[in-house]
Image (cartoon, rainbow, N blue to C red; front, side, top):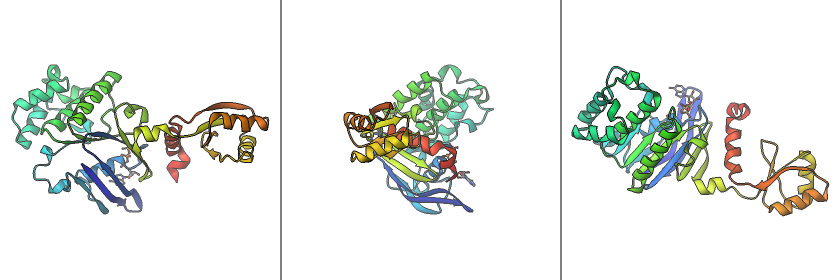
Length: 295
Ligand SMILES: Nc1ncnc2c1ncn2[C@@H]1O[C@H](COP(=O)(O)OP(=O)(O)OP(=O)(O)O)[C@@H](O)[C@H]1O
């Protein structure tokens, strides 16, 4: 279990993370999603004791990371797969980690096999692709047989086959009661892997819930040739159109009600469909537009 409570981090006048709170339960995979610069890495660094928070607390299994006696046995961390020592082989990298953690050398071979790197174990990490480094990083995180995994952008540099492989591995881990948080700046990259999402933008949590809840959205999405005329037609019909950044409206009504209200005022529709996750996509669109990023 991961608990983040009112966590904030300021760098001079920049607030990288502002009053962030969320929990990650055992048996689940949470995607920590946000555009570049949203505050994901800073939050994960505070969670793993690498960056002291300005205020607030983050605990893993009830303790701050820095208070865990042998943290690698409780929580597996991969923050920057690209930063591994290029001169060591994959096997040497894991052997070094294993001796620091106090786990038997046999565990290294097990983990190399688990991430599909046995054949490349003798090659230097400098010759590995980013996807292979991600696999090695995940092997390193799993070495101490932890119950919690914290992974920063693990899918970065992985091909679709690698992402599918990682999905299976993490879902097995969670099915055995493990707790997983993984960050990404791409919704599509993690959508099929995670059960829950915590969305961060500009250092603040902007959405938090089950994937189903967040993707389901609700109501109807409508887009017309004349947005202001459509807005008026819907308002006159007693519906409350919520304007979206893309020029569409989300309406808490059925497609038929929306269609009829538009037709009554001769509005030409270009799109009319159930919201179907548009809420989350729209939220992401807004977070990644330059205007939102500057706000
Ligand atoms: N050591 C630091 N000193 C000053 N500002 C920092 C520092 N680390 C992060 N920041 C700032 O904090 C904000 C959040 O950065 P962070 O790296 O946490 O975002 P992120 O969501 O992980 O983005 P990315 O996907 O690009 O890594 C950014 O504005 C960044 O410039």
